[in-house]
Length: 150
Image 1 (cartoon, rainbow, N blue to C red):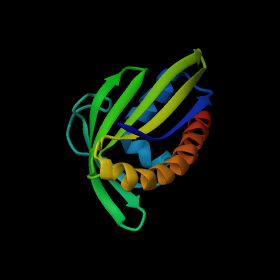
Image 2: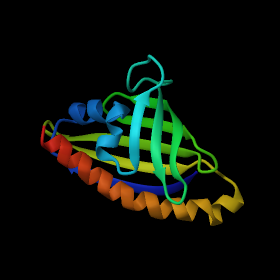
Image 3: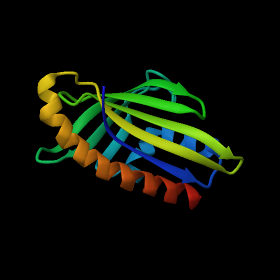
Image 4: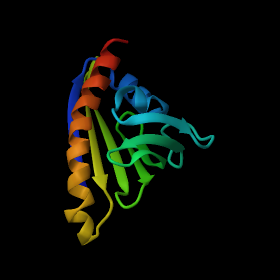
């Protein structure tokens, strides 16, 4: 896998509050730039492996695209991993949560590409890396602001 972007924020809120908010990906568009809409696509609970979402995202030079996301892994108050059906990028998002005190936590957001092709390493991955680095910094700052305002 290729790391596209990562950002970390220390947030003044309990880790369980941050986790509960972030694993409900229907909130993702409220804090992450480029996400136009996201909705549940099956009846599983948020944060449950196998939970599916349909995400509408803004793709530079291509307009809006719909992507099916699937929760691949989730560990309560610790991590969430999703994978998107969006070739050729094949995104994998990981969010890690760490309690710092009873009233604060650290949230680390990462985006990877699962595309292992040599051509992708020199074309789509560098482009996606530039876009996602900007979005990651803005997104984590927005998540911090939103959670600390609650």
